[in-house]
Every structure is written in C-alpha cells, then in structure tokens.
Image (tube, rainbow, N blue to C red; front, side):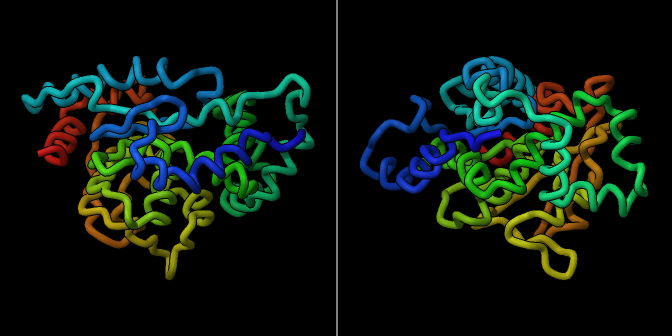
Length: 283
C-alpha cells in the first residue's frame, strides 16, 4: 500500500498548531477548543468527528450527573484521527502478506510469539476474530511502525489542545496517542489525563512507547497534575489494568463493570467512578 499523503499535511498542521492557537485562529478541522478533549480508540475509520462526539458527549454528561455536575456540550471537543486509517480504493486493502510485514516491523509478532509460542498469532486470531486482528495490526501496528503516521495521528490531538484545555479523556488506542503526545509537549496546559480501556500496560504497547520506558517503568507524561486510569472487569484490552504498576507518578487506578460492553467507550464514560474523577478534575 502507498503511504497516506494526508499524514504529511497533518504533520505540518501539528507543527503550526501552537502558533495558530496563539494568534487566535480556529483549530484545524473546524473543531473549537474546550475544557475537555476526548480522543477515541481504534476502528473508527468509517466514522467522523461529529458522530463520535454524538456518542461521547451524552455519555460524559451522564457520568458527571452521578457527581451532580453539569457541563455544556461545547465544553467537549473530539480529537478525531479515524480517517487516517480509511482505505483508499486506489491502494486496495492490505494483503495478508502486507499485514504480516507490518506486524513484524512493529514488533508485534515477536511479542506474541514470546508470550504464546510460534502459533500465538493464529490462536489470537481464532479467539478475537480474524477481522478484528487484521484491523488491530493495520492500525496499532502501522502507528508504531510508521513515524509519519504516528506524528499525523498525534497532530489531530494537538489541533484541539489550547490554553482552555484542562482534561484529556482517552480511550483504548487513544490512550497511547495521548500519553505520547503529552510526554512530548510538556508545555500543554492539560492538568488531568483520564484513560479508559487502556492497553498501555500490555507488553507489546509498553515496549513501543515513546519515551522508551526505563527499568520497566514508564515516565510521567508532561506537566500533568493527575492521571486517573479506569479499567472494566472483562476488558481484554487492559492487559495490565493497574497502570500504577507500570508508570512513575501517582496513577490512580479505578475499576468498573461495563457488563457485556466491557471495552466500549460509552459505558466507561457514563460510569459513576469516571464521572467522579472528571468532576474532581474540573473543580
């Protein structure tokens, strides 16, 4: 497949995002800055920022309802990057061979084989479904293996961060993006990172983070004052649900039960524990 040329444009957008915000220009993609910025996980290539916001914002408001706190929808902006992974008909969909090359280049096959043996990839495919595994390799694998794409994804978050932003809520793959971007840009005004359904503590993800963990400990991201991590019972994406074990600083780990929607963003966001953490961050 050919590289996504939109990535080059987004890298440039990231480089200029701080200057644009200081000069009062509207954020890229027409999304205004807000006190709360959300960033979604993988598998949103067929979505758009307004669709995602249409599900996230009510769920965030419902979570805050438990804490007796109300906000306006305009207090929330979404960092959307799903379209960067949408297939271009001119390129065609990745073949099995191309996906295996991505997995090898990103180190995914090595980690799986070290944990589950030479047949580990086939076993995971059977357990989670071939289509889910293909999409995971195509997105998370490409994110780690392609520096331009990695920068372009992080640029989408940078484009909605401004002086008013106090909280970043990140789900699934979005927690990887948020952690790396906050670590890179310590001058951002974000005070609280709220991670939900995070794979950050998993062997594969943890070993590929930037900055690289030292002595099996990840560094504290940027100038954050608080980091709250919420993991659901039964959420397989949370390979290590207690991120305080993996990262420096006072990570507060909370547990919720999302029932049969263990990894979905909405049950995470509308949970009382998540709402209480967000309310405290906004107070």
